Image (cartoon, rainbow, N blue to C red; front, side, top):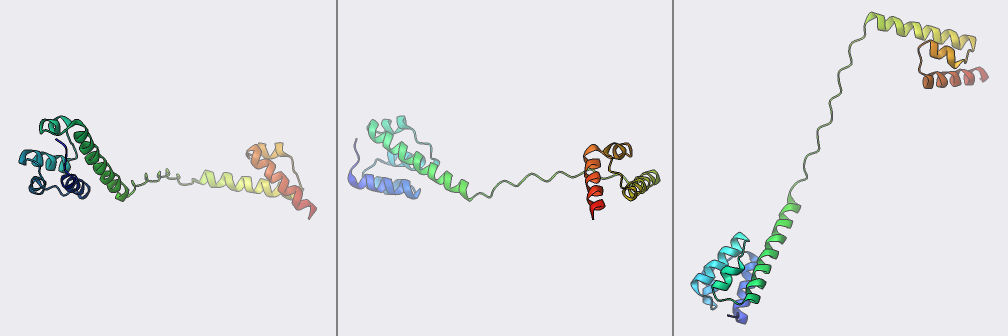
Length: 153
């Protein structure tokens, strides 16, 4: 069974608009059973070539109907996916709380500061002495460079 121009146009419109009506399809020449089957396939988006062939449609016609229904539902799914808001970003990690300073921590920091002040007054720029005083090598080099710059000024 091949489709008439009217039947093809009505079926194409119903597929595109996704508003199937078995009564309308029957009015353009489909049997009631075929019209109901087509309406169900348009609604669900799951056409079955074999079922359409059992209703008397040719293989080529059944394939083109199935492809049209599948393509329309794919476009609808893509449009709906585009409308979904993006997934929320993962929450930022919560930093671990810093333990409170003890009196020993404060005393050690004041001692290191006093040692650094003495080195600055004396103009000592020895990285080794700064490392022995508890600074990392990188920090010691930075402090030594600052002391050398301050001696020039």
